[in-house]
Structures are given as structure tokens and as C-alpha cells.
Amino acid sequence: MAHYLSYRSVLKSRYGLPVLKVPVNAGFSCPNRDGTKSAAGCRFCDNRSFSPVALRQAASPAEQVHRALSRRRDRIGEVLPYLQPFSNTYGTVEELKRRYEPLLEVPGVIGLAVGTRPDCFTEEIFRYLAGLARRTYLSIEIGLQSAHDATLSLCNRGHTFADFSTAVTRLSSDTIETVAHVMLGLPGENAAMMLHTADRLAALPLTGVKIHQLMIIEGTEFAAWYRTGRLAVLSLDEYAKLLCGFLSHLRPDQQIHRIMADSTAEKGLVAPSWSADKTGSLQVIHRYMHEHATRQGSQYGVDRLNG
Image 1 (spheres, rainbow, N blue to C red):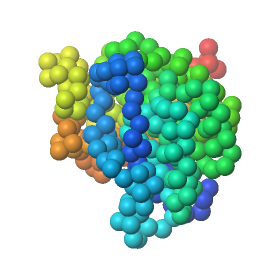
Image 2 (cartoon, rainbow, N blue to C red):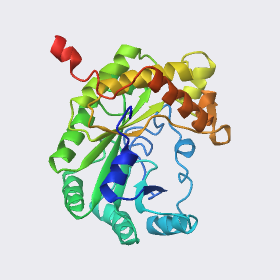
Image 3 (cartoon, rainbow, N blue to C red):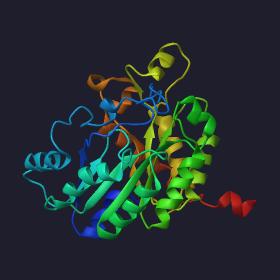
């Protein structure tokens, strides 16, 4: 029994072969770091811990993909460059074209996955992305974390859920796939609030969801909060239970890109320690899903039907 609709399986079914997602540093910045909205960034964020390419940008995006593929001589399948660190629609259309277009010329590349924020779009960028999606596969991954504005403010996100909803609706109107990044275990949120985030995502024309646990990373403001007891982290069992509930409230057709994040002490991980054992933690999560017969979408619309 498949407990959720995995993005990997969707891509393999679509293209007939596995698709290798290659992280790329395209050299963009972020309005929450360059002073446009804030110079402090999100209180949980350090891209060096989340992205293997956050510190690498000497080579062009296309050259980064070529180098990554040269190290994978056993590769079988297609390639999907993932513009990962920071906000990769934060620039002019000309800047986006200079970074995006050469990637599409790399042999085996099927399209682009672009990580960004909901407040990093202009009308010109929407039009460019719409044209791009007509030429190639395009997935826009948008950082959200929570549907609750109070939580977003606490995290110093610098945008609202309405901003996210507007971006997703507009992109979807141009038949562009959209993915929400959400985080479970943020300070101030209980289980009901996290499930409400799932309900709100299920109500949007959103293609996929990438789910992470809150990780405490050295050098972030949340690390200081953690050490003074201002916030706590989820145990693996707590996370498995919350994750399964979250999945059950999503639509059955929404593709699940990830069900946990991972990092290491060498990359700044402070807590939870189980984040450093991806294989073992995933085994625990999948065992919990099996024991509790988790099924994505099983609670979708239930409250509305009962109400």
C-alpha cells in the first residue's frame, strides 16, 4: 500500500525513467536578507545547512549541472536542475533568462525546478514563466512554512499566507506546477494549527507539498531561543504522528516531494538529533505509516462534509 503520492514516482511514471534532481546555486539573493524586507533573514534559516550548493557559485548554473553529472557515471534517467538556495525568481526577467536558459541546453535536462518565495514575482516574471512552462517542464517551489500569519511573523518570514495564495493561484492559472514548502513543529503551533495548514493547502490549486520538521541550526536566532528554552523540537515519534495527520488532510492528488529534512552537526545541526539519521528516521516514519494505515487524503473534506 502506498501511503502517499510520491513526487519521485510521478516523475518516473511520466518520463519512463528515474529523474535525478541536481541542486544548483544560481547566485540569486533574497528580499529577506538584502534589506528590502529584512537583513536578518528567517529565524530558522541557514541555507548552508539545507542546501549542498549554498556556498558554491563559482561556476555557472549549467556548468554546475555538467560537473554533477560527470561525478555520476552510473546515472540512468533524466535530469532536473533544482535552483535551490535563496529566492530564484528575485531578479529581472533578463537575469532569470541568463541563468535559466543555458540549463535547458544540457543534454538530458527535462525542465527546471525553481525554489523561491511568494513575494518574489512581478507581472513580467509571471509572463516569462508562463512561456517557459509551454516550452519545458517547470515546477515552482515556494517557501511557506505555515498558513498562520502569526507564525510567519514569529519566524520573520516577511510575507503572509495571502501572498502565497495569490502567487499559487496566478501560477496555476498558467498551468505551472507549484509546490509548497511547509515545516512542522514551529514555535507557537499545536497539532490543530498544523492540520489547518494542510486543509488550506488542500483548498488551493497546488500541485505538490514538501514537508520538513523544524531543525535548529547553529547561528540562527532559533538556536538561541532553543538554548534558552523558548522553543522545543519534536521527537521522531511526535513528528511521525503529526506528519501522518498532515498527509491525511491534503488532497490525494497532491504530490509529496519530501517527508523530512536532514542535516548534520558538521553543517550546523543542533537539534533534533534524529535529523542526522535520514535512513533510520525514514524507517521509523514508514513503520508508523504502516502500523496506522496512513492514507494521504483520507481526511480531505471530512470536516466540511460533517459541518
